[in-house]
Image (cartoon, rainbow, N blue to C red; front, side, top):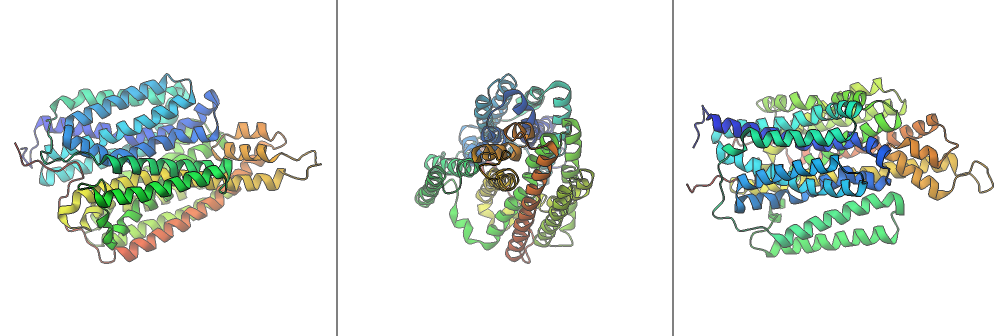
Length: 522
């Protein structure tokens, strides 16, 4: 067992390895969003297929996190971590050589599974390598590594795309993953949980299928309409699978999700935090690069630099939030952060409507600052609001809600933006059937989907009479009410958090995430 005050060189190398691996997970997410316009220019593809570049990764990442934690307990934490990072590197390399959008989407989905293994195995390995205060510092550094990936991912992706093309983004992920493996993976100790009971496969399969159908339905709405047979069938299938999942979790001995934790009102309030940050922050990591690059025609490098206004506060504010909990309750800090982020969204909507790129920087900084307050506290809150003996499961549920919720929020926002864009295009170009300027409904629908995903060039091909300035103005006019919707969702979430976490203070316990329980056996 390592000393709390002086970790060994081997332990520090393990920490460096896990933190380096942690950097590439958010880096891969935001880089994919920045690279989407460049991929579209070279490979083409439908708007839905392009959206899956981001959504497929987030979907599988969120669905398999808890299963990966259970697998790490049973097969070995080191084995799952090395397998996850190795597979992640290989899949990134294959994406770099892909010349087909469908293959990229499939590889991104597989990469989400690999990322779940890397995160679950890495976190579990740290829990075995460190104790007490040293463990807390180790997990804090891992969290900071995520912040680094978020903060500098857009800029790094922009520089690579501008100078070497979009394939360089995936090459870089391969290189970083390989460095993580050689830097200290060999120093990890192989550990297992002798009381591991295996994976809840019925729960995992039904939960994953439910999220997949829900996400697919949301992404299908812009193309087929909310009342189409396909969309309604997908939504009905998702509802049925949700019922099956709940039934399974109530009957199995060792459920994937312990639904009884939702009896705690504060636990429900904590789940609102990652959902809120998904809508007020994560979706902007996808939408804004499309606006900057695909609609406003900024270079990838400049777009990445502008995105740092949103993400750099995430390096500092979470640390400030932890310090402020000495004087202010975590519930009040989280609520205040969401209110600040909501105010920033309202401000950003005005800058977007005015099509003033420079004026967008200040509200983006404000959103980053506001989001940073709950971002630095919600992991700890997820375990402080339930009994200590149930901390592991609480963390697993929170992680699943966080990542899966981000994927669903992306699909919802994409559907809303496409619908708003289609309404604006219809009002401007549908006209009467005898008008020379009239555009068919299918063409408008396709153009709306293209414009909503930042592909202004193809949208203009579908509506030749539309000028670039007109389409830019229509996009801005569509994004404006969407940002106001996100502001309303964030304010509602702030109210839920305030009511659920009133008077809540962290208990100072040292919980360990699911799949990370410290073994008592030698």
